[in-house]
Length: 146
Image (tube, rainbow, N blue to C red; front, top):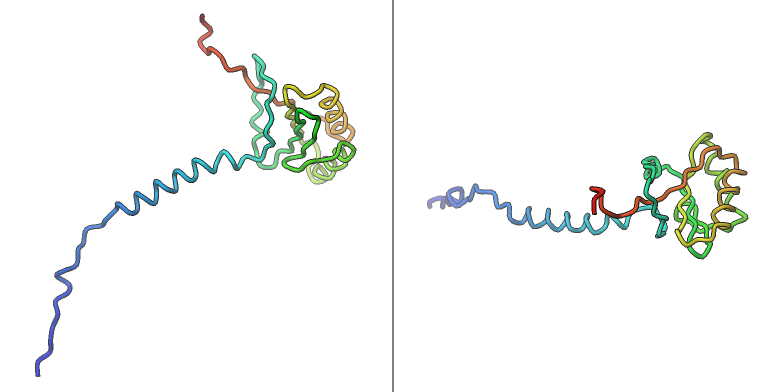
């Protein structure tokens, strides 16, 4: 009666196969590249294009309060559609714990001036001292020639 000894240790491959890991990482990279632009917390608006746009990096922060005015005069506070008569109250509620915060207004280039003016008035009557108007820099020749 002998003991059958199997030598399975000699068959073990000690090389690491990284091909599946690379495939998974490439798929994740593609997913993140596609999803990241969709995660922006903004309403789709064609902003006015100007020559001397002022950079306002604080408007891109998570806790920034952004009011958007669409082409048809619709108002959005963040991603939420707001009735014009409720904008001031909702802004005041958001600013209850953060006094002195800047409110940013994104208006469509073809929105009526009166709608933008009314939105700014509602924000100002809610007690906001600082209002930032967001615009885009005109796309063109950066070298300044021809």
